[in-house]
Length: 188
Image 1: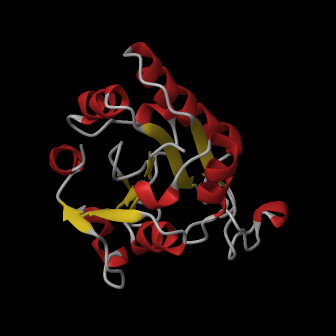
Image 2: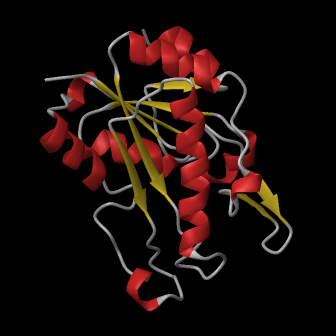
């Protein structure tokens, strides 16, 4: 069994983007909006070299809500993956859930076992990649990330991103860090 780091993407690995049409900070809707957070690539490289299995676990409801085309979200991911490849960082899997219970796109308007806080993707990683969940961490900037990890026995880190503060008041994470660089100093 292997230990893993399950990482939310937006607000953790890349910056959230302010969109005037919603008045909120959200996931990037276009590749040109993607900006990695400071220090992320060296942190991921260090964790990879230390033997952690890396997994991305991200809710991406913008398509379900009618804000953007699914192809645009996939293009954002492609640019993100290219940045990782460029420096030799390998995630075992990229898990994206595009659904939302209050969406407007019929096939994507639903409850999902994979939409955090539900732990479907963590359980899939456990099964497909022999991950020991009790030795693993879920890292995110919202209560839904923390609850997701806790539901399967992972330890958890809340990144106290101020742009996500409205979504950070009901969970009890194992650790709270200001960013991924500070988190790396604690997880070795």
